[in-house]
Length: 151
Image (tube, rainbow, N blue to C red):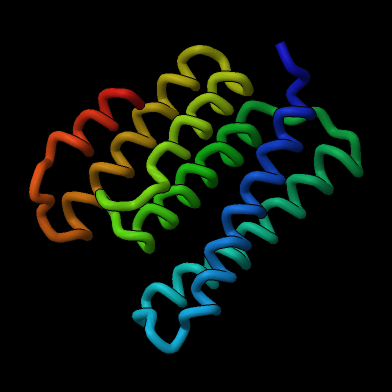
């Protein structure tokens, strides 16, 4: 079992990589991108910086042991970050839904068993909410439903 601080470190790196990549992509096509896309990617980038730096400061610089609430907050923020990534890159046609599996795995490593199950349910609900309410109906809805079953 990996040490929680090592897992958190990788979670921080992955979060910042995702946010920076989305932000860079939005900046490259900012003239053609809808304003909501640039707004969401900018908000994600800034909030990812704040959450990650605060978490790094708390766990690695102050050397505090992360509590259950801290870990839930970190993993739930990552569910939100992946949901934004999926939303701005096409919803059900996005290449990013498999990142939910990484977040669920991180939740399973960092949290007790019920926490990992809760994170899986929250990730599935966030993905379904995005593709059902925020995007047009999908031609073949079996793909996203199979992805949710996998989560």
